[in-house]
Image (cartoon, rainbow, N blue to C red; front, top):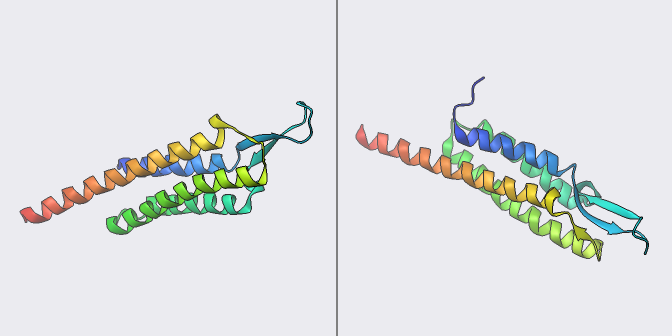
Length: 141
């Protein structure tokens, strides 16, 4: 199978990054006052965050195979973009409320979410470009 559309590549990379996000630490916090007792917070520790992250990964994966219906693919990708933003906001609130004094792992889960958001927006822009191109061909007929 050859992937010939850039949006499919970007969506696939988004799926991979969301899967990695579910396995990487989001923040670290001290269990006690000693600096040796540092524990990591993962997405699976917050069921809402984990569920939304898995939903985004599934929607991005499904969107890859909706290439025959471009408008529906754009709708699913736009929904995924909104859910990625919701995941970012939910992650900040969960960490802030459930683990006071926790330090965010910047080069862990949060960067993966931002990169996934950039990939999803890029895929959406390529889809819009394809839609404009298809409409221009329809005008020529």
